[in-house]
Length: 267
Image 1: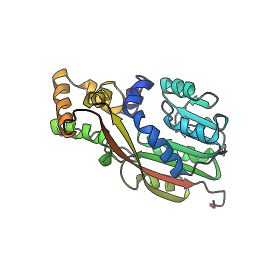
Image 2: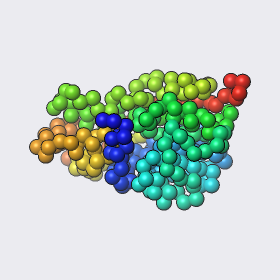
Image 3: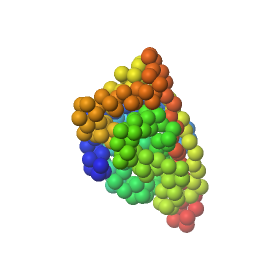
Image 4: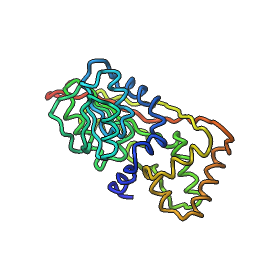
C-alpha cells in the first residue's frame, strides 16, 4: 500500500481513529511528554497530530497559546482544532512544516514517523523549527508488543502468508528512531520504551474498530470479501483467547529524543 493510500485510510473520521488508536492516547501521551522532557512554559509542536490526543496533553502542560500542531488530513485538523481551542492547528505534512527556524522549544511526533512520506526529511524539519538546545522526540509502536495491531496481522498472516502488515514501517523496530534523530544532526540522543494500555468492553468493541477504514488495517479489512472477513474475525477472537467480557491490552512503543545542536554542533 502506497503512502498516499495509507493517508487516505486515515481519512474516514476522527471518531473512527479514536476508537482504534485514540483509546491508548490518555496513557501514551503523558508518558511520551514525560519522556521527551516537556515542561510548563515551553513552546511546543505536535507533528502528525491526528485528532489531537497528544496535543491535548501539550496544551494541558504549557497552555494553548504556546502549542502548535500539524497534520495532512483535513478531518483530523478540524477535530484537533475543535478539541484544542486557542492552539495553532494547521494542515501540513511533516516534510514541509509551515514555521520559522527555531520557533519551538520542543517538537514531538507521536505514532507518525512510520507514516511520513520521507521520515528523514520529516525529522530534519522538526529539528529546523526547534531552537538550539531544544528537543526533538518521536515514538512509534513496537509491533511485537502492540497486541491491537500485532494480533490482527498475525491472524491475517495465518490466512494469507504474503501479508506483511505494519511490521516493516520505519520506527517500528529497535534502533530506528534514534538512528533517524542522529542522522538529522541531533545530539545527546536517548532511546527507550514507553507503555500504555486500553480497555475494551468486549470482543465486539475491539473488532469493530478494525472495520471502520482507519489505517492500513482498515484498508486491508475493506479489501476483503465478506466471507474472508468472518474467517479473519474468528481467528482474531481465538488469538485473543475468546474474551467473554471486558478486557485490557497493554502496548509498548519505541521512543527516542535528541537535542538540537547550535551552529558549532554543540547543544
